[in-house]
Length: 447
Image (tube, rainbow, N blue to C red):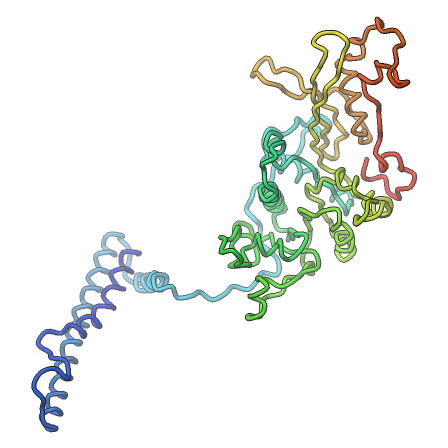
């Protein structure tokens, strides 16, 4: 059909070219001057010649188009009844005739993304081997939490490999792009439910949706429609809402307003919010009502550490609201070093705190993989409550029996009043929110 469209487009253009280059016609104003009657007769004669040549060329062009259509139909073996309409459609696409805008569906159709298989045993779920598996497990865990009536749900896993996150040259935009990619795939698993991916502000939303034109950078997402390019169940919003487009575009053109919450939204996924923006997230949750809100990879354990500092939210945000964030899916790898009084003097070990709801908290220790090489995780404990970060270190050390490597040759030697064995082992220190459990209205954050 594209070939027929190209032939048809060329044939439609050819008459004008024949008109401008007709042989034997002298342009007006060139040659010997004519009298008034002569000029009138010459003009009428030239006009008749032009009309005659245009008619001949148009007939020839129409004949060529019909021959091209017949040849194409014979090659495709189809009937002639539908060919003209198809050729017209192709021709419109060639000349860039804008298609009418589609209205937003009030409720999306099924996304067509196959849902992952349910957990066989949530307490024995193996840790993910890829980011795609992370997203699958996160969806299953969140869906189970929603089915149990949870409204504020936490999802946490590394957005990039640990080697990349440890690279100081890695820009924040790279991490943000990875977070958005994971959130989009996560949202598609909800099928016929309408999911709103919520950015911390309208500027961030517009930047990634391609509404702004500052710097001439190419858009990261197409803004030809409000919904996702693959799945119609995803839309992109921002805390507090706002208008599309850059500041300059808003001055000259009336832009469409993006609502932060729409009536037919079913699930909200909050991404890339900072500690200063968590009060806005709390206000957003109040507006969402009984609909579930997922705090997607916000690193809440890090954000909580800033509460109470100048220019940051107070600790009451944890006591009154954030303590109700239920950790449905959690992947927290950790690496530690322990000193001992004998060679090799330093012992490096690593593990992971892993949870897939409705399963319990798994304490995983990294051990050598004799079959495939490298390392693999092995479950060493199962906890009902989330252990403190310092407790995780001690649980892994106990499993490795590192305390047995400390001999008593040094007796009760102390340094600054502290036993040397204690200095090598480390002191269990809990964070303020791990200590102030009684002040927190909800204990969901560690369940």
